[in-house]
Length: 258
Length: 257
Image (cartoon, rainbow over all chains, first blue to last red; front, top):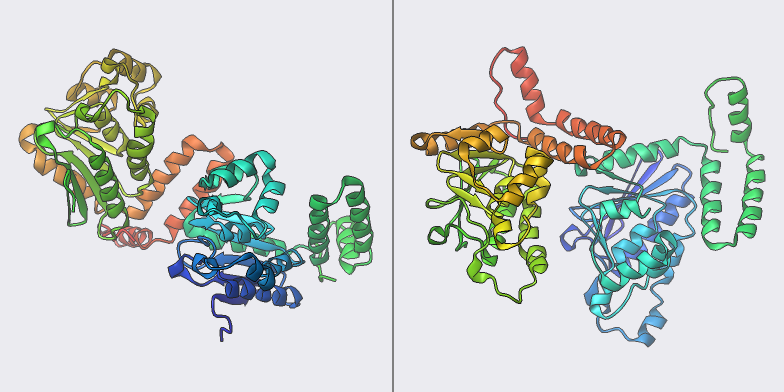
């Protein structure tokens, strides 16, 4: 039974899939939908059977942006009291790998949601854009921050100011996405990568994400110290013993995720 | 629905006729838009398995209608707004597109023919990169396609000297795939399109896609895309039909699925 209104979730062989499910509205994001996504993600993050989380959208587009009708009549006070973006902060706390499979339009809030993923696979023909400027506003759910950290100030300003559409090829060139695949095989290729990650030693994958995220926010020296602690921590795991023993004994390791 | 073109779908073939015969089917902005819209419609129409573009009257297309050109016009913007979107729509289409060149194809009319997958020409057809005669450069993707078809040296010659290429020379140059005698024109164009419309349509689309990758990607990346394309082709009903027909020693009947 699906207890969510705007998304659909499923779990198959350690891989959780969250699908945006408003295809007729090109998966435009409303507040309840964002909340559902983050709630589902947090549940999967705590679920021992889940190793990787895949985020995608039903229909032809990943998401064409935020639901404009919902916020048209808002004012600064109502927005401050609503504090809707607090839900978005929670995406950054997910510890398991999040794989985004995107296609069609990835605009505005949809682009911001995609930027919350750790890795992105895009169909041929996917277009990204921050069109907020054309509506007299700007991204509010991390767009100016996450995009800038990814592509640098120069490109971020150009794209945010003009609102122009960014092709998958350009997005790939600037490191926004990891690869471009045939539209027919978007899910197949994404699941292949998800399975590959699911088969890696779980704690390594987890602490690598934790450390790489610190590299984005910390000064180098602090980051190096943080990395070191995580490196040491992995020596408390069974998988470290198994991995190194298997290497020395020239056999395939059998990881337990512990 | 259309005013400057005629568009009909019949037996799996979309027929798109440029329809301004008194102007030798010269382009105006509306015709750019209508060609784009018709190609888009054919792309999404599941009945359509082949598209034919031809011209009403004695010309295929004489290029930009000079009556619409004025001295203050920004030529670059005209391309971005009108010709570019039309040519891009053609390039995005994964169904086979045939230019049935019934008469002169000059300027952007030549470019339109070049953007198609096949050019079959009547004895009356000719190609002319006329841009140089008004001090402009070949546009609407013209040189992009031309250099691939005839090579750098010939593309340069045709563009700088601006000499007319006859139907016979077009075939010799590799510009045209087939020359059709006048009295057999309608019949053979139909037969050519009918054949295309019975081939494995999905595989055709994947071949078109892969050929684009062949010029855009590094070899390593190309091989990865090739593997994906073959995976998709391997999943089609037409692939299974082809194998079964071969085993059963009969002719395959492809559905395009």
